[in-house]
Length: 351
Image 1 (tube, rainbow, N blue to C red):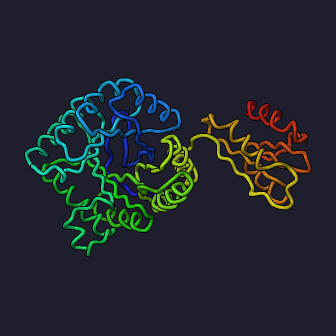
Image 2 (image 1 turned 60 degrees about the horizontal axis):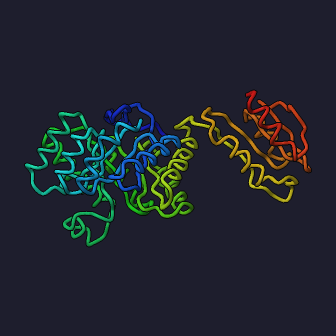
Image 3 (image 1 turned 180 degrees about the vertical axis):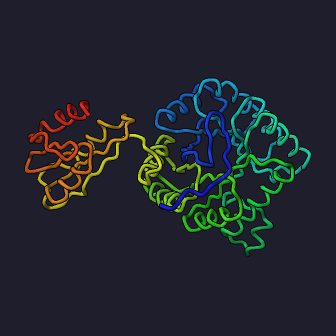
């Protein structure tokens, strides 16, 4: 993997992004933000799953005025998602949010933009410019023959950046999301050569859990492998906690996060004589709440099993209705299939 691109270090609440900070995981609630109880409950669930920054929709003043109470009851930075309204932005800042998601060019009056920037400066609140392929300015679409292009997305981002920079505001983060991998990746690659601001990476509207996981893993994974990206969001048409699960696995697979177990398991074949699919799912369930970064292997036969077990902290190698439990490359036990999980739990606890 290439070296991480060096970006401006920016504080968001109690965390930092950019610079030498770790890549952080974001998500967004799907509750009515004005319903404080439901919104806080969902954020708490996301915190437990591993979310590190949370964004909430602020479509009206009632939602904006709820942000202060929400902020008091959660432990991760709170981001207000604002579109068009400077009044909602000002109220969100007043309520103590940690970041705004706001495109300044969408606020038509320069004086109102200045009010938002002044308030954000005073409270040291950064602003994320969020460019989506589906909502580019008409003038940019016209320039690129009514097509959404990576070049057009970057041009849109640079317009918004200039507005803030002209007002001497540089606590900026940027996202450039299309609903396909090619334009998303190309847009981030182009922008990363132009600016040093932290980049929030994701493929927007990626789809349901299965398709969206594939699309997001390729798109986000490619950019991170190239050293591009300071925060990520996996956008799924599913429960927000599912987004966190996928995001964690993306970061773990690239060695960008040591967070919980890594499970290596084989795909099964005609040599497998143990119910490996069931066994692996059971092991996953057993270790799902463990935070320690341990390597677990669950293998179906002796072809690849010993090699994988040698690299794992703890492993199960299947045989004919039996399994070996291996720790640090050393065989500990030979156990009947119906006793494997029980013995695995004992050895895992010792580890």
